[in-house]
Length: 182
Image (cartoon, rainbow, N blue to C red; front, side):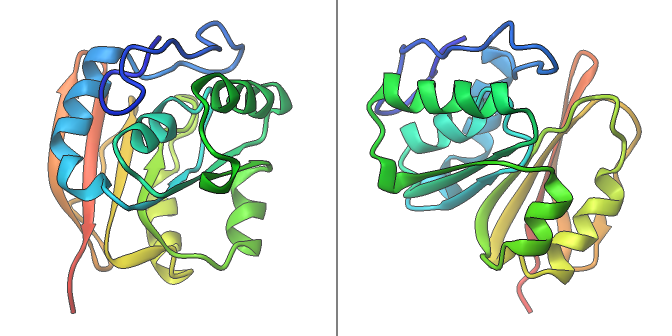
């Protein structure tokens, strides 16, 4: 597993075998970042089910100004911290928090330009989580939410989050929602 583009291109990321995670494959990640490349520069990013930090680290490599990494597994957040140090990312560009997503969303008051939702595949609650992100003002007025999932289908709209792209990669699906301007 490696960073595929940007400032840290080609650098290895630790944690591929981290129990409970299934990092996004390089070819899927490359396609995903090609779809959102115009959104990443200077973005404030939330990697909500971070695992190894693969998606958030890629965003930082491509110019995001800050990424908040959330995972409920302490081994995952330790791995993220090691990856941050290994890549030489400044501590003022990152927050790494060990928390379940519900507690974090309840306590956090920040909006984000990009939110990555890549929960373990046994979870099929993205259709319930997307409206919560809007209700709690987690998505900036021009923000996007990137969902990676295997099971189920997502609707084309959740309040003012509108589906703008959907791709299928084998058993994995990517859906990108953009906040509709009001």
